[in-house]
Length: 152
Image (cartoon, rainbow, N blue to C red; front, side):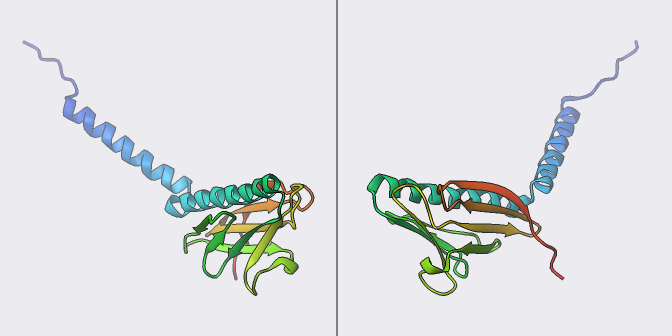
């Protein structure tokens, strides 16, 4: 009697587990791993807070301020909203000096017509970065992927 050779269930499960593990590692490497996820999440969170501040200024008819402290890795928005940026990320703020609450801190003021003082928040991790640009005329908040210059 000739017995047919096949693949056992255990061997198939082992191959599936190996493929899954390799896929997870490849996705983490391509997406920048944990820092990449923190970068994307923090960028979306800061952009949402900026959009909220603009919307709140329009709704209340009063100027509203979004502040950012790069040294402390914190931000604040109207109505007690605040958040932290992970210490692994670097923060660069560019904006109008006239509205800075204190030296080293940045602020963007939104007006009741939707306009703002404008500015840019850049969050970076290693060589990946995102710019959060706020247009001064319209107050529109836009996200754009950026490259971080190599440090020498």
